[in-house]
Length: 158
Image 1 (cartoon, helix red, strand yellow):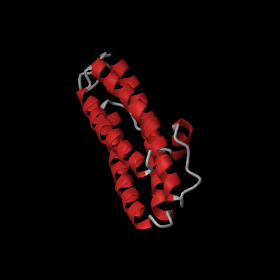
Image 2 (image 1 turned 180 degrees about the vertical axis):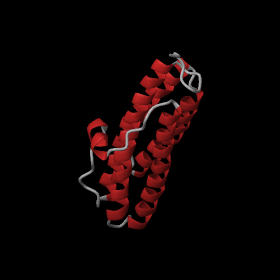
Image 3 (image 1 turned 60 degrees about the horizontal axis):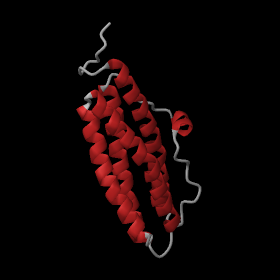
């Protein structure tokens, strides 16, 4: 049995990366559904502005969910697909309050506080094992999400 996977990476370390990617996937799945709820249910003075921003965000999250799942497959493992497992694995809780736009933005910022450290951990792990595909993905996500954190924080005047 080879100690390398189909793309030439250490199989055991790739398994660790796939496990962390599944954790990231679970967090993204809950985050995505929360943002869909904000989009559908936001009310008030900032409705039009936030409704569009939430749609923009959930569309981006959906793309990332697919990219993460496909990366897990590329590493030779199976992406988790069950919502019950996502709920168990995710550090991001399901949102209860979805109509207050300001609370939704605060929840979005809290979600990024969960996701960014996982992505940074994956960035370090992928660099260690020479997994350029996962590394590039995480680097792109981190850069874009740090900008979103700044923008959502500015929106809240923080």
